[in-house]
Length: 322
Image (cartoon, rainbow, N blue to C red; front, side, top):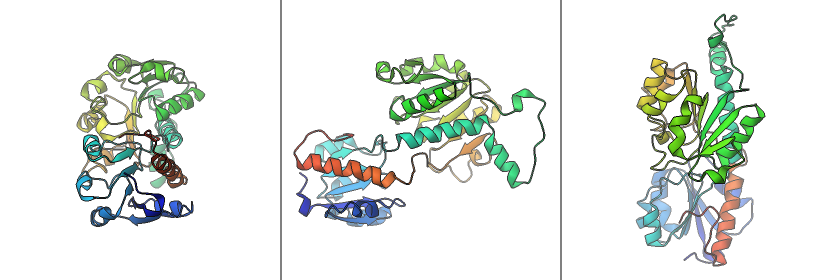
């Protein structure tokens, strides 16, 4: 049971985001404190009635945070939380789904453009003071997006917005989601994930915008990569576990696909010795697809709405998970 407003204490736990500063600007009068690393979270979790957290979370806190009644995830993904244990303890859980849909979709579109226009190569050439000459082989030149096909795994808020952005570039979009009827209108066609493999030979770009679930774990594996065009690119703004990394490296090294743009990896970051770092046909961004100047403000709006719902005794939370 969540204590009343005047007795509530919130713990904001994130290594970088300034969640408490944003919260204090709302002048709620609700007590809060902030921790910046997991060790400090472990030491102080018992003080909190609500924890606002993402990557620092570990399920041992379910037992050690004795007052905990509510967890507001800072991220859209919730695969790190033991939902059954939350339910058994009566702890409520909500995600931040949708908080960064615009940003991640724009990031994915930026990665698609970067690969099509060979911007990583241009940046590398700039660093070496190289002015690349004109290219005789058409297959090695920059490309246009018009007429290309984009396959999107996960046609939710992010994937749906990405499909609409892609249409502005005259791309054909194919979406995949559990309930195809829910995504109708965003993509040119929508299918269940069972049809993913059959559609891969059509795709010039394959974008992952899905949560990590048992169904999507390694959805891009050796078989899927083998069905992609040699000229195709993989774009991952979802979770690293959605891709079989060893199979991806093999496909990139052999030329089975043209390249990959990755905003996430498994593990994260990639190991220092990972060959992904040095591959010229790979663009890595450090899981920043959802980061914007407004991120903290947007999460705290969801947090405050959910606290108000709990205080009113409502059973449904915004982005409810448990």
